[in-house]
Length: 156
Image 1 (cartoon, rainbow, N blue to C red):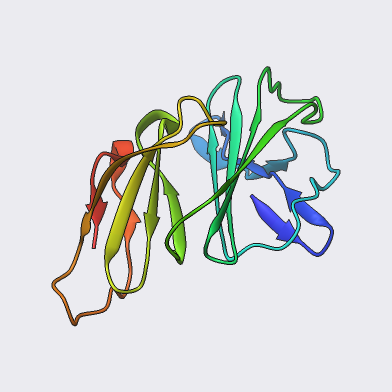
Image 2: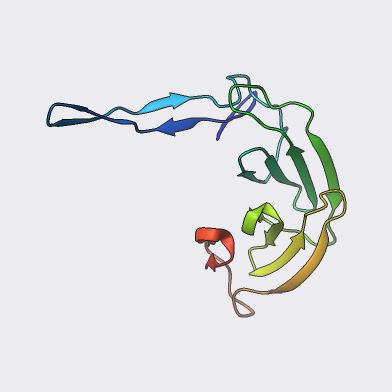
């Protein structure tokens, strides 16, 4: 994923291995799986992309209190992303970061004070809050957070 002034571009980097006799060659190859055109996404505070074999979902947090989910079904490498369905949800609280959870079915919204709210987004038009809690004790700030493999756990 590459953000440019004109929008979002997806970049696929592969490292095919070939052999010439006993010599191994690794040649990086860069391609654009959904064509080279940038996908317009507008301004955002935090952005996260989840891709499966046939679905691309983009979550953008705007102004800390607006969650925009755009889902592209039947996404095929070599073809442009088209006909995305966008759903905008106004949030009650202000957040700084958005992360996808397991299988792209959840969204983690996190603020600097360490508050996390988890939303079920299986139905993107109606995100449902399933958990709200703290990642760090009161009076402490969250410095960094990253999802671990599978996205069931977070490294805080």
